[in-house]
Length: 139
Image (cartoon, rainbow, N blue to C red):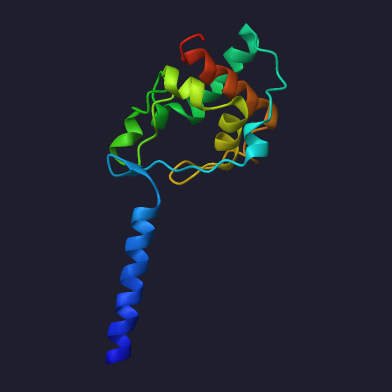
């Protein structure tokens, strides 16, 4: 019986440590570690009306349900998914995330966001990056 209590205490301590280890905002996990080499990647596509339009089409099909029409994280699916996506339409988001970081996050995903790598091409992901940038305030 003593060993069961000790094991239960160890498990409880581990859960408490895990729950307090990652930063949260409004109860949502906000930590999303992106490797520095991914953050340093530059968008190989030139921004153009055609590239942004292609990104907009992909966004509408693959992202809008969760991220919302203007990337505020307020899409209709946010009623049922937790954590809800963060607002990517702000100056803070623009200044905080590099193109490489956005590419990485779209490619790799993080629950509840599904990874897009293997579902769409790298070029399409880079066009999504340009589209997301077009929704942010100009620097």
